[in-house]
Amino acid sequence: MAARGEVKNAEALGRMLQQGRLVSGLTQRDLANRVDTDQKYIWALESGKNTIILERIFAIMRETGVRMYMEVDGSVREPVMKRQVKPMADLRVELYGELVGHLVGTDRQTFDFVATKNAIDTFGLGSTILSESVPFDLVASRRRASRRRNFFRRTPP
Image 1 (cartoon, rainbow, N blue to C red):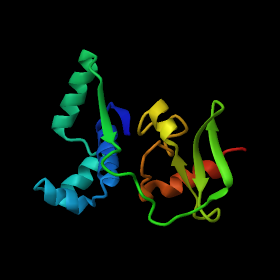
Image 2 (image 1 turned 90 degrees about the vertical axis):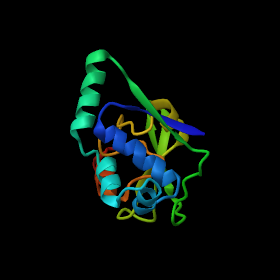
Image 3 (image 1 turned 60 degrees about the vertical axis):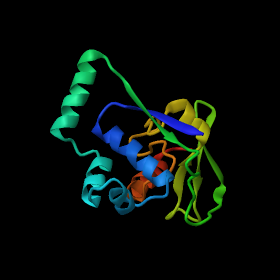
Image 4 (image 1 turned 45 degrees about the vertical axis):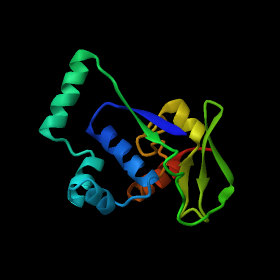
């Protein structure tokens, strides 16, 4: 099953590319070797670093009303969590009465948010409808885990 998201800027492009790589089970170095480039270039793309070419492409898209959507093909491989964790007392995260994910982990120091496939289908891959800190991703980035935890610690029940 595929997950789809709109790409409006270099950061959204990077998030989609990162999700595709993670779902495929590749490291940045593996991907760089496969496409004959270096790991630093893959990192820059995934980090949303703007280049003059990307700036111009997105500026032209804005001026002409063109929208870009990308799809991560989930049939490549289902994302696998490195270690199995149980939901913390089944802490459901709902938006407008609909389940959008769960908080999983063993305690309040290590929990993380995992979006449901339905939330990704409804709101789009990379959607920040909950918060900029909590994008709906197929595979959550470890780099942003503390931001996600802080968001949920400050959110009233």
